[in-house]
Image (cartoon, rainbow, N blue to C red; front, top):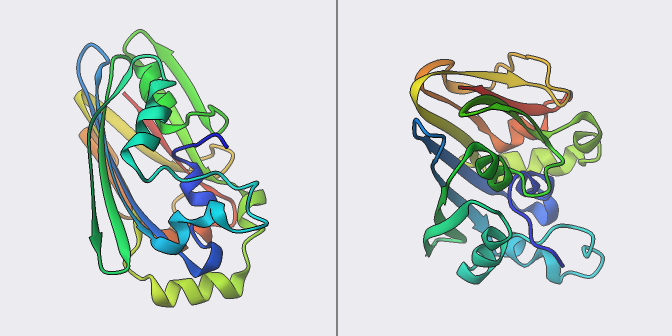
Length: 217
């Protein structure tokens, strides 16, 4: 089964009462190169999801160094720089750093299938809109399951940071790319060399119109 990265984490984070916390920090240089640091917390149940009968259609989450190496090796202009993983309570916390040589490689890292990201790149300036969930996807979640997961996993968040040598902007969007202002988003910096936002994973799922992050640089 082909292994995928973000945004497919979001598709399965509440299956079997499991959850995931995810931080993405992007550094971009003047020439369009840079690095992506991803840190994610994942329960043991969720990391083994591909082993359950009936879940073969769901993407397998890369949790080991070899998983990441295989995935990143498929992306031209990307290289796995470092990998570490440790147990913290019931979770496995994994940190990976990926170097990229151009914005196209960055977008391929964020969305390897290139199905959920809108992009517009002109030399080393441009934009991308990473769609993490949409109306069709969110409607499939069992509301009772989400409420149970919310009670158990209150500190699981999706946090996104983008750092550039010049001013950039961040916009919160719905599943179609239209701007929205969900009240649950926090720690928001919308413009400057560093833009950022954070939202609880359960809050993200409960955005009925979907959720995305657009960055212009």
